[in-house]
Image (cartoon, rainbow, N blue to C red; front, side):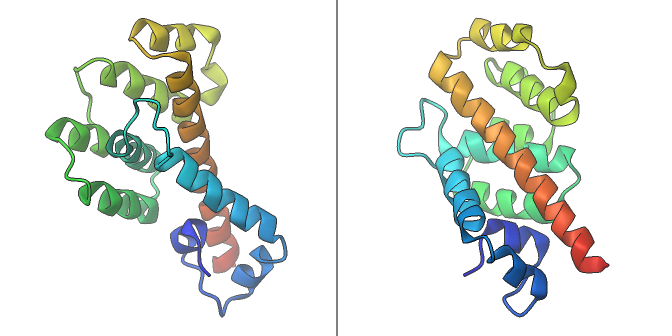
Length: 160
């Protein structure tokens, strides 16, 4: 069964890379379970699925990952997002708080993770995010950037 990383990389069950991933089923299953838990958790900690998907699409845009952009865009569209979330998803600046601070944080960690400091967490707190929300946001950012890099690597391997 294909998972979101297979789909983002364009892998099909007939391909060697698809089969190679299944040599470590715990990685395939773990990545898929992580994807579900960060995008649509049972307890969203006040960060609803439409916001999470908008941020995921935004990170896919920042990473120039067209397949993931399309996937997240389709998932987001199914939730009838607000205009503000559509703007956020497309990579536009948003003025509304705490979305503006969240967007800046996601952008910074996606593009320049080495520059992330404790002060950036304090900015999230000042914007009104609770500790559980900051953890949930961090997990989302980490997963989407992980997914982007794994899918890009698989695409490169596939093209060789």
